[in-house]
Picture 1 (cartoon, rainbow, N blue to C red):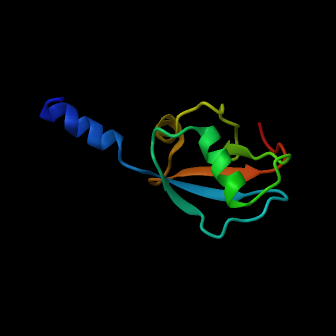
Picture 2 (cartoon, rainbow, N blue to C red):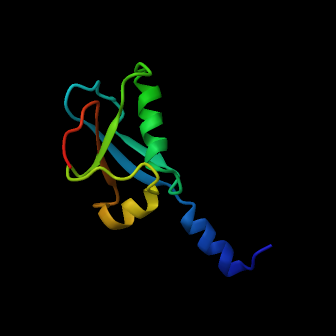
Length: 102
């Protein structure tokens, strides 16, 4: 077992991150825009979540963009994106079925 100091760091790291999902282009809109996500999830996990939530065909793709500027790598950790690009306590992600920015 880890000591008390390590436990407090672990608890802080395990807190959820608020993400705001915005539709762009011809993709269906998710009515619930704010979601809390485990900070250690990857971008590809969010893409799969959106794909399943929208019940898209297997042939359709979901592209994610941070603040309408760039497409993060699928293996990028949400915590890292939030620390670099989060604003007002949220990480703003735009999703679409076609490449839009970047």
